[in-house]
Length: 277
Image (cartoon, rainbow, N blue to C red; front, side, top):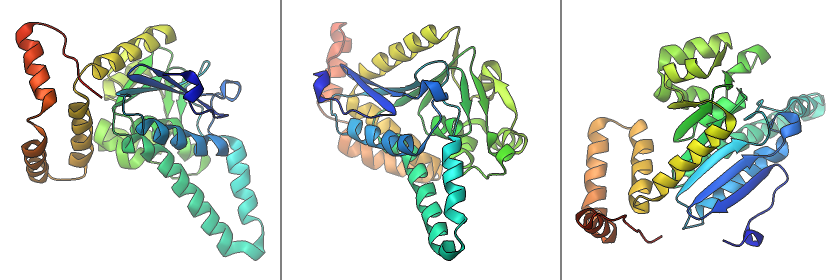
């Protein structure tokens, strides 16, 4: 793809390399802290990628040393200014509600994107960073990664997805302990909790592993990977019985088609399958 066609943002970088895309948070001098512009640009980038039919997997990372230090303090200061004007008590609360919903939507865009999204985490992954990776399909980290559900130390109830999503990843008890304590934990603890599936020795090894995984996913039937993501997310919110009914209906319509034919042919001919976008 011609790089001139890529969208340009101030706080995130979008790269497309064949069937995989990379979305990089780009405020390294601020530890990739999430300021108001990044909250706006992050979902714009993901929604643009969702329209690129040839993209089959996405890797999210942070430029520089850290994945993200969480919410930028400039956002906290701005929220304070909203409520300091007593003549706008009601309107300011509406503005805060709108901003929270905007932030929620920023990470819901990860789930809204039809293809698997991989978080490649190095350095700090704090507060809003945990919200972000909670919405990703897969999570890998470098050995220097540090995690914290930090909101408790700012007297804030996490409101961008950690509480709602992460219990399905690490379980209720572990989530409760980490949310109440604000504990900072390392890569090995993250792996033991199931938060990440793999710990890599360095950032370079991490990015190579994430790219390799993305390319492996991209080599599979795109309609199948999109279907798996849809059903993983749907089943999280529904019963096993409902999930079985949904997948039965889905596969009665989607199972037999060109991707199945190509997959079987490639297997019988002992060659690599090639799937159309």
